[in-house]
Image (cartoon, rainbow, N blue to C red; front, top):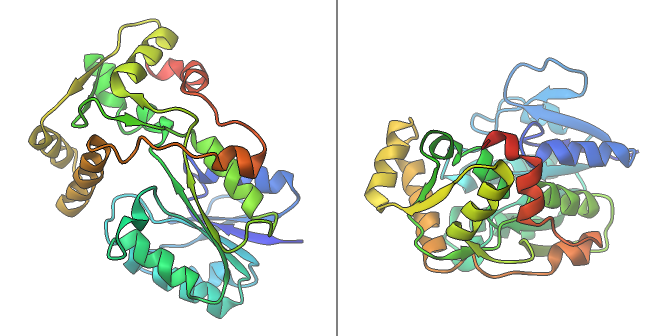
Length: 277
């Protein structure tokens, strides 16, 4: 029986991945940076390295992603890749981000390249912006002001549902059909935020709009929310990339790997409408 260690097992991507791998009959270790409270959970802190070796001991595969709130991704991910190799892990699946391979100096790309050169069996997935951001990171302004507030102009994004990301990851962790390949993951269509707001409005039964805010206003909001300055600047940089059109491209990777079309934003909006209503 295959044992897979899942980093971020309680998150938007990790939680559905755990369910899918468990349904396949895999033994899943759910990594948590907190004190484990359930059977199958293991303590692991990628920032400090605490618990890493113990969590990897005896594991066959690793689903790896960087914890939120940090911009020095390579400094957190490369030691985990090296530890996985030392522990005898066979395959590592790294969740990166679409556009990370635009420049080899980008921290996520540095981690990707390290994995590719590690001698381990590997996959890299690079999802586009998540649909789930609209009921998590961008939720407060929707609830309090009825507005999506972002500095991205009229640019479009091929938003992806995190459940599709998990479905791709589950396939890659249950088969070697696509071993040693990277995949950019997107939804099936690109939408601007005015179109997104209209879809959320219809599902929620209330008017939700979109306002293109100045970058500095976004910066002040992020800092006021308690984000570290370097992480705030990282978010502003990738939002700037969105504004210049880098998130508009679509790929067929979800359909090709899972055999199913990506979830559309209308379906996501219906299923999560209680957050905005």
